Structure formats: structure tokens, C-alpha cells
Image (cartoon, rainbow, N blue to C red; front, side, top):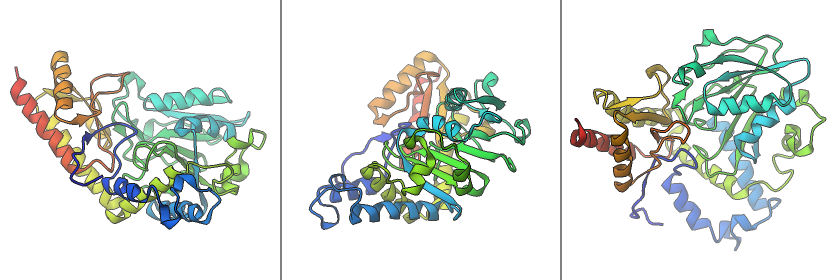
Length: 366
């Protein structure tokens, strides 16, 4: 791949854009990794060459995300959707309740899985408002005896994002951060468990990152299948069975790219700038475009909006596709438009989309 190759303006919600530099390096190393005469995908996950890649990815994630020493970093499979099951299976006991904050489709799915294993409750919900906002911290209700409180930090379908996280005291706070992990600094110590599918900001699909406090491992249910125990993977450095080796390699390369960009503070600033140019195009359109999320809950990762007229919206999406913009259709469950501006989406792509939006409005204003 050459840097002169024309790249699409990739706004896919996931799998999503990867940094061009990472893709090019992977291309260079694909056939002969580290002078082994093999692709990394071909070598044993017990080999020293792969072990170095694996451990380096763990170390870089810990450093970048400022993960305290009393946490384990796991590389699992099954996506965030399997975590919907593993969390209650490991931590929801007959005498406790798991509380869920509903802010979109994925938190609904997480709650649905938890109900299979025990008592659940809704700590808060914005469903009546069609998930246009994140609940205020004052709205969140749970009991001190709850097994955990579960939130979804960013909602890809509805375009909302938590700006401040609840403080849950002795109750474990669990977060699905699939679509905004590593997009900004986060105080990991507020959480007992953070989990994320890699395919938004971390790398290709196939890897699931779990960050879990070590004391929780000691309390986890042991009477469950081996592969569904967090302790199985923590005790084996995520190498109990064959891990997604190439995905973990790519994740490590993405982490290096984030480091080279200046770390999470710099990445957050870039993400704010990228989102602003598109939100400005919406806000300055006098209603030609209008957002789904309320301004105070707007996501920096998924910008959801509609065009004032349904036929114009179809025309907008068709012309955008012709102009090289990929992935702007909203989720099938809600329709509309969505621009996913994850870490690897360059500012130039966001500026190009904003310019296109302004020009489309100019040519189609009634």
C-alpha cells in the first residue's frame, strides 16, 4: 500500500478506520515477521516472538490508559456481547442484584443477558426520550448491596456519550467502553471492570479487551465453564488457548500510534476538533440538519443526525457515497445518518464531510 493510494473517507461504525501508518507497517511485516521467515499469523502463540508482541501490547495499554497495578489486562474473544454474559455469570449471585443504566440498544442487550442469571434492576433509563441523552448522575439509583452497576460509556446507535462517570462507592462499576475506549483519558480506578471490543479504536475485530480489578477475580463464581471464568485467562496471561494473535499484534501497533500522537490527552483534543467541524455544520444549518442527541450528551465518536426532508436525506446519502464517503447511513434500527469519527479517522475526512454538508445544503435548500 502506498500513501498515495486514494483512501475512502471511512466513517464506518465498526469495524472502523485503522491508522494508515499501522496498516502499512503490518503490510511490510506480513510475510516475514521479525526475520522469522513466517507471518506472525503462522507462528505458535507459545513462541518467544509472539510472546514479546503479546506482553508489549499489555504493557503499552497499561501505560497509555494509566491502569493501576491492581488490575489485570485480558485479551479475550467473543466481542463485548460475550461480556454481557460473562459478567453476570461470574459476579451475579442469588442474594444480589445487578443494576443497569439503560442508554441505548447495547445496554438493553447487556441487561437481557443478565436476567438469565439472576435479579436485575434499572438504575436509570432514558428510553422514554428515545435515548437522546445520558441520565444525570442524580437520576442513577442503586443499592449498596448490588453486585455491580453497569453502564455503556458511548452509544454508537444514538450518538450519546457519558461526560462524567458515576461514583458507586463499594459497589463495583462496570463499563462497556467498546466505542470510546482510548479516545480520552479515564480514571480507571473508578471501575471494577472495563471491557471493549477492539474494532472501533483499538484494532481489527476479533479481540476483546477486559480490564478487571484483581480483588474481583478472587470473588468470582468458580462453578462455571472453564473458558467463561475470568480467572482462567488471568492466570494464563490470556494464553490459556490460542488467542487472536494477529489482532493483538495490530492492537499493539495501534497503541504505538496513539503514543506517537502524544497520548490520550492529544487524542482527545483531536477528537474534539474533528467532531466540532461536523457538529458546527449541523448547528449552523438552521434546521436543515438536526442531531439526535441533546447537546450536553453528544458523542465525540458517533455523530447522529437527520436531514430535514426524508427524500433529501436519501439524496444526501447517495451523493455522499458517490463523493467517497463510506458508512454514513444510520443504524438500521433508527435510520438517518451517522458519522463515526473514531481515533483513526483523520481531521481532513471530518472537514471534507462538513464541507460536503454545507455544499449539499446550499444546493438543496428549499
